[in-house]
Each structure stands twice: as structure tokens, then as C-alpha cells.
Image 1 (cartoon, protein in one colour):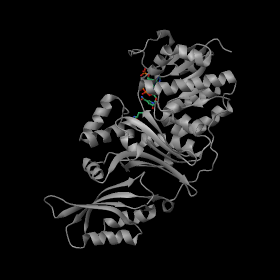
Image 2 (cartoon, helix red, strand yellow):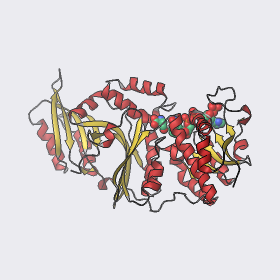
Image 3 (spheres, helix red, strand yellow):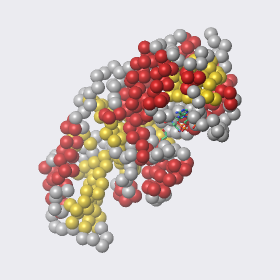
Length: 433
Ligand code: NAP
Ligand code: HSE
């Protein structure tokens, strides 16, 4: 039994500072849990002149990663520096040096999680990354441990705080997309370059990690179909509301006997769906298991202290494993061969907005195209467009094969009566009809 546990920290930014504060402020709780004090031995930073908002001895700071990774006293490396290639190199070095690793790095785990799990397992080390998805919400542990005995069929998540904040503010306060994005940047949820947030890539990385765990398949980032929110308009949200829907950027992972499908896209949810009430920068992950039924994980998906909570809880897990001598046995290796659904095996329900010419038979022509491709309507709304000889038609379909929708979307623009296919969103979480 060691007298003291030493942590090596790679990064002292938003999350790293939170980790230092949590370890300093919750030391008594940590000693109770792991049986000895936990101290931060070395910290990698880039800029020695930067003012830090944590109390930390200057002698602990270094610009050389080797000082952290190869310090003989360091038991656990906590990687909170971000980026991909450098972080990957350091983590591989650490695992080969038989140091356990905790990381918050979703970009890295989405791309190289399987490779790193395998290296960790081979070296008898733990590799934990709870903070990489939904910040402070213990959803990975919830899936791997809490629901580990079940067969998970669906994971639906609001896993990007920036886009949820933007959509909430556009919907409830009528803010423009640009103003809402600027506010999210000022409040610190958005990445330095918010493209990955608004174009859905950040959520896709998180859904890759969630789907891998939920379905026990080696899902890759490129298996996720991704569409962001940058084209969503206030009008879309208003029409959705008239039909009883709320728009969210939804990460959707679903599987049945035909295979799995994973996507991230702006989608309408019925207002009664549990995810519809998740507001602002909050995250939530809805999980359906065959035995447990519906469950939902909810909380802060980002921020210094929430994310640090997940990181330090992973450190505690590693230390408990050290006391029991069972490190390196919890690698999450896939059980099933990856099987993805083809377009004709996917089913969906759509909200479609069209601008059409105001003329007799226009609606009949549109209806015929849908009927010829086996798609029927659940709801339809027609509104005149002021000052133009056009009407806006909003259609909500019943569920139908994606392949049939693909044909309809191709042919709609060829119809003489349709001047523009204005919007097209999936409707998720509604009844199966
Ligand atoms: P951050 O504020 O930009 O901090 C990064 C830290 O790493 C800084 O201290 C920086 O040093 C250091 N660093 C970066 N590259 C370095 C290099 N090449 N050499 C030496 N030091 C380097 O980032 P963050 O927001 O804390 O995010 C860290 C990780 O957590 C990322 O993977 C992120 O995706 C993940 N994450 C963040 C959140 C969140 O709410 N922020 C939530 C979940 C997950 P200097 O301070 O000297 O510049
Ligand atoms: N930019 C991310 C978000 C931070 O908005 O959710 C947390 O991963």
C-alpha cells in the first residue's frame, strides 16, 4: 500500500485547473475513498508567463512532457491538454511506461479509442475517459456498469451544449443564430473555433464513443451521418412549435437485427419527449434498454468543475483498482462485429417544408409523388406567403423507408409546382407510426 498517490497532469487550462482545485478542496474525501493522500506531482503547460487561477507551486510546472510521464513517482497521468496527435503520443508513452491514464479528450477517443484501449489492456493499465462525453454526467459509467447487463437498443443524446444553447435562445427569446452563437462563445461553452460545435462534429465524436460502448461494436467516427444547425432558421422553429415539436441537435444511435445506425442532426421532438425540456447548455442522454426500458442522464455537459468531477472520479476508480490489484481489466473491447444499416434498412419520419405555386392541383401533385413512393402524411399545414403567388406547405410524414425518402427528395425539385424545398428535418422520439 502506497503512502501517497502522485498524479501527473498534462494541461492546466479550463479542465486542468478544475482538477487541481477539486483535488485540493476534496482531499479529505479522496483520502477516505482511496486510503492515502493524492497529490499533483508535475504539470505540463505551454506558456510559463500565463497567470493561473489556481494555487500551484511553480516548481511543479514544466514544458517538457517527459518530466511528467517519466517521473518515477507518478502513478496516474491525467491528459487535459486537448488536440489529437501530441496527446495520442503522450498517452501511448504513458501506457507503455505502465502509467494509468485518465483523459477528457473526446476528439482523441473518438478517433483512437480502440487502439488506446488495446495498448492499455496489453500493458495492464487503466484508460478511463468519462469526461469525454457530456462533461459532468456519469453516462459512460452508467452505460458500462449501471446498464451493463442489459441490451441497449437506443441512445439519443443532446451532447453539445453550444448548439442546445443556440436553439433554446432562438426558440424562446427569438435571438438570431449569430447572436446566440456569440453569446455561447462569450459564456465559454463553444470551442475556440465553434465550427465543430455548430456543424455537429463535436456531437458526432461523443456519439461515436457512446455507440461503441452501448452496442459493444467498433464504431468509427466516419460511421456517423452528420448535419449541423448552421442552416436552421427561426421560421423552422416557429412552424415546428405550431405542430407541437421542439428542435434539438440530436445524436441518435439505434440498432436492431439489421444493424446499427448513428447520426447527428437537427431533429424535431414532440414537446412531451423527455429530451425536449433540456434547455440552454445542459446535456442529456436518453437510453433505452430491452430490460430496463427508458432511462435518462441529465446535467452539465461542460465547464471547469463539472468536467473536473468526471476526471477526478475516474482517478478515484483507478486508485481503487490499484488497491485491489485489478488495473487493466476493465478495457471496453467490442463484443460484436460491426454491422451498419444500409439506406433501405433505415426508417424515418420527416418534417418537410416546401414553397409551392398557388395553383389548382399543386397539393395533389405533391401527394402523388409521396404516395408513389410509399410515404403517407401524418400532418399537413398550408400557409399563404405574403406578397407572392406562393404558399408554404409543411408536411409531417409517417415513418417510411429512408430509400423511399431519398427518391422523393430527388424528385421534389423536379415538380413544376415546387419552387423550393425549404427545409427537411427528421422527427425523432414520436410514436412508431
Ligand atoms: P484549455 O483550456 O485550452 O487548456 C489546455 C491546456 O493544455 C492549457 O493549460 C495548455 O497550456 C495546455 N497545452 C495544450 N497544448 C499543449 C502543448 N502542446 N504542450 C504543453 N501544454 C499544452 O482546454 P480545456 O477546455 O481545459 O480542455 C481540455 C480537454 O478537455 C480537451 O480535450 C477538451 O475537449 C476536453 N473537455 C473540455 C471540456 C470543457 O468544458 N472545457 C469539457 C469536456 C471535455 P497553457 O495553459 O500554457 O496554454
Ligand atoms: N463545446 C462543447 C459543447 C464543450 O458545447 O458541448 C464540451 O464538450
